[in-house]
Length: 303
Figure (cartoon, rainbow, N blue to C red):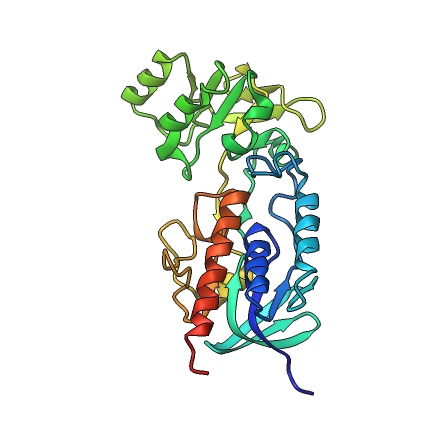
């Protein structure tokens, strides 16, 4: 049986690859979008700060994106996991749960895996009262007591984050969690703006249901907190790890800034797996750029 060949196989079905599929479909490229989930923002109630879709539930965003792809007959969507990618530029063999296909190019939009912190009450509140981005969720929790949980991944951003948080609330507490030291100069600067700094480790996050009411520290201190901002460590999905792509110093896939191509010729990447600057609308824009670069790359091949 002859193997199906696509101009591009898009691995992952989040904002980056939905946008890429749209652009490639409009360019009349034959595209397969393979998406088996799970969604990285599955815990989130809404996608915010996305023009024309502010406040839309993630599942609805995904449904709308797929619906808009249906008008482009060259785009195929499969709810299948990609198990492996082999071959080379121009002739990649992509193994899916339901069989293999050939792809001239591959676009990875697999996001990242968040390694949730081992703090009591953290996991169940992730995406409900614990957030990463104030631009995505700050408006909904404005004028409430906020906390910023310091970790190795965000220690260099303590001061700018805490100061900008004052744009949404006048009650901000920085929790160093006993693991990261803040200089006396930085601590003084924060306290001078009315920002509290707590150095004791966080013992427990408490509140009714998935909401957050207070942060309990190991030293017995309890502080009101209804929105906690944190940045857990992230890692690549196993498929990406297995490809042996070059990563940057933070563990993100290194891509050419303009072309979005990885260290492996013919494999492109877009969205959260490539950068710490993450967000749905940013990933969507990156996916559109990657699609344009793939289309040009294909067009430049000898006919």
